[in-house]
Amino acid sequence: MAKLIITADDYGLCEAANDGIRDCIKAGAVTSVQVLVNMVTKNEMIKLKIAIDQAAIKFGKRCGIGLHFNTTQGAALGSNAGSTLVDQQQNGNQFYSIKTIDCDQVANDDLKAECRAQLDALADFVDGYTNIDSISSHHNLHFFDARFTDAILEAVPEEIPFRSPVQWRSPGQEPDPRKYKDWYETMPVFKDSFITFQEAQEDSTKWVLNNAADTKFLTGQRTKMREKNHRTPVNCSEQWYGQPSHNCLVWIIKEMDRLQQEYNSICLKKEHKIKSYVSELYTHIASSAGNQQLDLTYAMPRRVAEYNVWKLYKVKTLLEECHKGFHPVELCSYRDALLAD
Image (cartoon, rainbow, N blue to C red; front, top):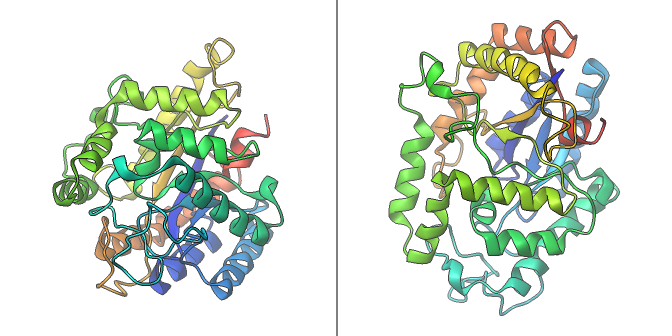
């Protein structure tokens, strides 16, 4: 059976994002939450655990808690005051933003030290590295740069699953979103991502962000992760396709069922090492527009739009049916999807 991980990014960003994510966990709409550990408070993490406990009672599975590795927003956790990740002109050990960071100037040792500090902070909350569900990248920056990925792989001591850098919309990566009738509607994330690229001040950072369109490079990044014993989904569906909508979610489930049938014939010949076709749909959620002053690459009103779709009755019903096994796709955390086979 195909397995779908539904991930909510940016837990810890602000109260509206945290509230919305917890609501969706309790509704069974989120199976893995990615935490900005350098921004989240202890009280918010306690609330997250309570929401996960409540969902586990209802759905029989626990939502995973993963690290959304972040070096472009908030303050560094690492103790190196002279870190190349930190804007020395700002107070409070603040990171450069995605718009001001110069990727060429970031030292590998600083990146590894910050990654370990954030992993340690999350491991303290979830009672050990083996309970960290996954590792993803805030703004995807660390997976679009081979040097950054190498540094992170050196810093991670356990076999923790990684988000796949390969996207559904990439050429040669099925399913082909152009087969979906609403594909040609403008995807909000495209506009936001393009603005971020335009506003990046350093050429080195623009070069890294441009790798998002290089399928060969991204596939090589995925292979590198797997060679280091970090399992990944086959791909990720990025944002929703032009919606979000109930129809799009139904399409994703149908496509994954079809792809599982094809995957059955090749899984033993490929590098995946697992029998299920595993994909990830990641989402950005907020229960209200909240703090409009946040410097975001994906605006708060768009996050509210995604939240509103997850709360629709027909979407909640569809997801509950998936949890009960009425559809050919199982909703899972990273560890349940990738390490249970």
